[in-house]
Image (cartoon, rainbow, N blue to C red):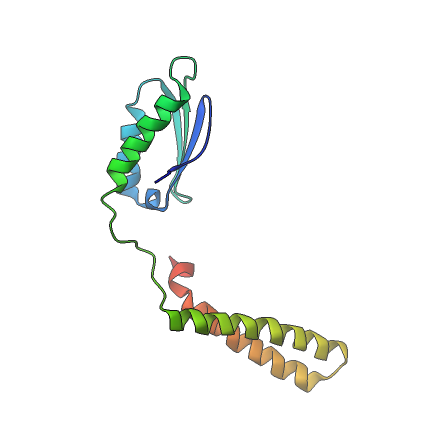
Length: 145
């Protein structure tokens, strides 16, 4: 697995969803800090990202990448089950139709508003709201975590 999302001599960015976990983040931060010629590590747990500055004159880019990948592979291999909720195919189909319903009803609602048909505008607005509620209910865990 590739954990390094960008790397130039002297600077490397690592991003992984498991870096949002405080204990895992701290372990990886400490392990990376112990590498030779690391000048600074800036971490952002909210985005699951680490920005590593190192002395490029003393440490080749390939070596620091390999060392970091080894540490990350070791620390992140404990994660066998993803925390992300897996959606069933039925749930995905319902969500797809809800999105189509939102697009269609929004377009119709705007059209009805443009031609001054208030009753049809209100009905299509209610349909849009129902489809939006379905979509949000399906993704509530992701939105609220």
